[in-house]
Length: 299
Image 1: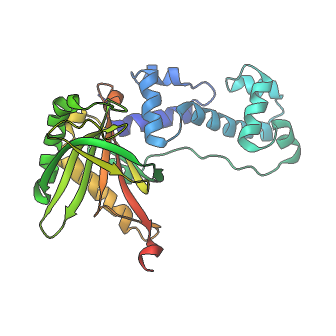
Image 2: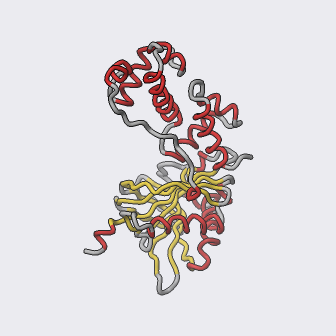
Image 3: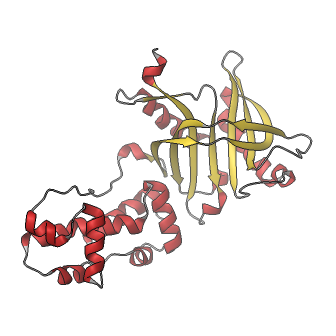
């Protein structure tokens, strides 16, 4: 099995080396991954569809042909895999704000999207971490089982509690919005006592008909930092070492001098795992924490 960082680096390299003929199907065949899973993985990693990225890179590369050759527009379109001149013209104008003919005539400066790349800061063990993206999370409700977990044991006990919930208690919950998505919710963090509450849960439409032994919680709409993790393992194998490396990377974000936001993860944070996204090789997880602008903390 190819590690996710190696796979994505190879995909990015293959796109750049074969821009004129590359497409998603060719990439998936070359790297023995289904087109569906390649699209999902690429979108999850870069928050951009692979089709849009390939098209953008093709259009950027075609600028060199427009400037340095006398090829007609149709021939350039065909060279980059577009069967019709008008398709190329429309795509070019959407990307750069003017047609290829207008660009060739005026020499106007246009902004191109550079090739994507992975950095060492993205890499952890056999996985990758991306972010943060700053996003608004609308209010949502969860129902699940609450565990009081000591800080020192959280990286071991929380994954065990998650598996226990997923295999057993979740089946008792009704009105689930997405039955494939697990939510692990950390709240009521008591630094002095050294404990926090960890709710193994699923999102629900409402907080009615709660089975005995389960609890409800509402997360209010908040500005959050979102980190995305891809690992070469089953989601059941999200373990202490992986979590420790992830949290180290996440803490580095807050300590960066240029970071505009501070995490409020001393109050609440949660992770989401869409079990349907597991393709037999790669696990995907999202981690969210409310944030505040650092300037607001000094007011």
